[in-house]
Every structure is written in C-alpha cells, then in structure tokens.
Amino acid sequence: MAKNIDVNLINHIVNTYSDTILRISYQYTKSVYDAQDIAQDVFLAVMQKDISSLSEEKLKAYIIRATINKSNDFHRRRTRRKVVSLEDVEPVFTTEEQSVLDEVNRLPEKYRNVIYLHYYEGYKVNEIADILGVKPSTVSSQLNRARAKLKDILTEERYENI
Amino acid sequence: MKTYKNAINKIKASESFKAQTAEMLVCQQANKKKFRFAPVAAIAASLAVVIALGAVFFPMSKENKSFVITANAAELNDNSFTTIGELPANNWRADVEKNEIYVIADFTLEVKGENIKNITYTIDNGAFAVPDNNDKLILTKQADKNVCVPKRENKSFYSEITAKYNNQIDTTNDNVEIVFNPAKIDKDIILIAERYGKFADVWVYDTEAEKLNNYQKTTEEFFSGAVKDCRIKVQAEYSDGTIETQRLTYNADVKLYTEPLTFHTKNGDETRNVYIAKVNLKAKLA
Image (cartoon, rainbow over all chains, first blue to last red; front, side):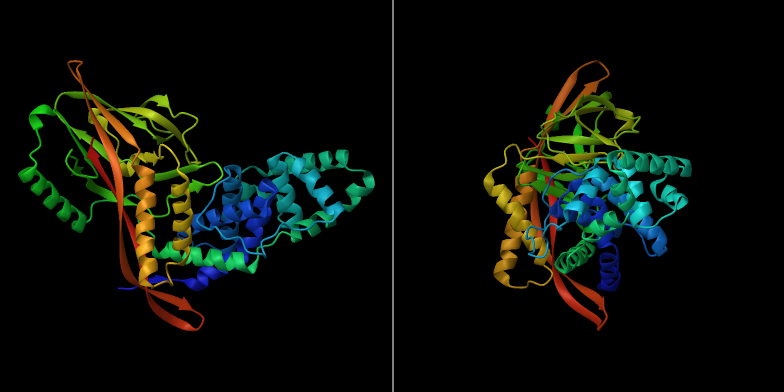
C-alpha cells in the first residue's frame, strides 16, 4: 500500500513559518546559513509531531518555542544540505538598522525574544507568556527592563525612533 | 520600533531555501521509521536462521562464557556480525569544519546469566546519552569533552554506566542512546558525508542505475565508517565478587528498496516509486 505524503501541508508550513523561524534564529547566529540550518532542524522536529489537530495559533507558538530551544542549543554543524543558493545571501542593513540590531542583540537573550515577539510579531504580554511558558509578570518585567536598557544605550532621539 | 521592524523585515527565507526544505521534509516523511525499533517478524525470522546456522557450524564455546549479551533480543556471537536493528538514516551529523561525525542509536543491550549482580558498560569512540531524570543507572564516568555528541535536551553523556542485573536498561522506557564516533576522521569520510547528504536530497527523483549504486555504496561507507571504531566493554560483576568481561564491535550495511509513494498536490494525486536506504546496525563480540 502506498504511503501518503501531504505535500500541500508541508508546503503550507514551510511557506508560512520559514520567515519567523529565520528571524528568531538569525538573532542568535548572525548568519543566514546557520539560521537556515536551525530552521531545517525545527521543521524536521515539527514534522515528527502529530500537528493535524493543532490550530494555526498553537502551531505557531510551538514553532517559536522550538526555534528558541534549537537556537539555544546551536553549534556549528553541517546538515545534509550542502549547496547554498545565490539567493541565500546575508541581508543588507542600513547603518541605522545595523546599529539598532546590534543594540538589541546586546540584550540578554530572554529580553531579545520578548522584544521580538512584542514589537515585531505583535503578541501581547499574556500571549508571550503562553508561548515561552513563563508568567505574564515575568514577561512584563523583561519588557520593561529591555526598554530601560535600550533607553540607556541609545540617545533619546534614537530611542524614540527605534 | 520602526527601524527595528525594517531590519527584521529584511530577514527572509529565499524561494530556493523553501523549495529545498519542502523537498527535504517530503524525503523525511517517506523515510520515517520508528526510532525505537523492535524486532519485526522478518528480522526475527532471519536472525533465528543466522543463530541456528551459527550454532551448527560455529558452536559457541559457552563453557568459556558465563553470560551472553543480546541486542534487541538477538544473541551476539564472536563469529559474525548479527543485525540488531535499523539505524534511522537521518540520525547523524557531520561537521566539516570541526572534522566531527556522530551517529545515534537506541541502547538495546541486555545481559543474561546467573548470579550476576551488576553490569558495567564502557565505551570507546562514543558516549552513552542518559536522561537526567534517570534513577536506575549508576553513572560512573562522564564522556570526555573531546567526544563529539549531539545537543540533547535533558540528557547528559557518559563513557561508563552501570546497571543492576535485575534492573537493566529498558529500551522502550529508559531512553538511553549510544552515540558512535569514528576514531579518526579521514578527509574521505567527510567527503562521503557530503556526498551522502547530496544523494539523500535527490534520491526521490533519481532512478538512474549508476547513481543508485553510488547511493547504496556511499551510504554504506558512511555508516559503517562512523560506527566501526566504537567498542563497548561489557563487564559483569558476580555475587561472589568475580568479574567477567566481553567486548562488542559494530558495523553497518545498507539495502536499497523501492516503495510507491502517493503525493497529494494541487494538480491531483501522483504515485511514484522512490528508493529508500535501509541502514542495518550490526554487532558482534570482539
């Protein structure tokens, strides 16, 4: 009997979540190639689970958590994918963008993640708490401390425009 | 946070990365095997034949061995390699820059004998991965820092572990793994890892005979190269305080087989034959 592979599901997951995974893991690795390595590990882990019953919201939360865990465990290695496409180049940031990213990346890892989830993904404090498996008060305090640190580091004008 | 968002927006997955990743996931789904292997009827039947023939032509000198070692219910002998299970074909890593390779398999060893109190396993060119919440094993020696091991959540790595004979490691419940490392990484084996990776990416679509022969040969060279240097010393401590030791060595071979797969695409269902590599892990007493 033939096995069934749901190519549509695979394409949907890869197309929907690749950017999110890369954005989180890039902040750990600072390298597109290594971030892609982590992304493929995350997808492999996701496909090992029975995801058919998960809502998109729960699936995304699971993927974010898995990406943070895999990024924390990251060490330089090669996977079976050897060819790097010409499209897979490092992103080109403006001086200002690079400067802001550098400052955010200097924050402790937990602060960086809440900054990303709140300001880029648009999650509320309770939602971030659910994703990361911590208390909402922890998320609030991490966000406040992150903002305070960024305010200390950046000039007032740059902080307003961050 | 406008500048921050603009910067993050520039981090995107390319279309080629997405296509390659989707293809990899399709291959993985096609080749998915249970990580915890149990002897299926075909393997058990062939093992019975091997052991029976072995007993006729190469009788084990049991008078010199007080205990026997089994792996996945197959009794090991010192005359020939016994297939003890299947290696998940994607449970390996090669780091070209660090010259490191590892392959992982479930720990399935068991000792059978009389008046045995404890069994100690010691590994060279590898490590045992043990869950941190283990309360069964006595963990006598941590793995050397130079050993190449995967990152495993909630597990630590040891070069020596001891189990009580009456409470041995359970394959299903204890989640202990063996990590195999080659003793020395030749440039050739790293090149093989790269070639194997390349074949694994394209095998679904490739039916040319020459490439298939290369795929089988390449896969076998890689896996056998990765496991062959690993040695496990099995030491049984008896109730009277005496100790007996046996040693294991490993190998791997690869069989290619075809299987029909149905792909559900937006243009409808399409069935193709794909070629899948089955990696058999083997062991014998050294």
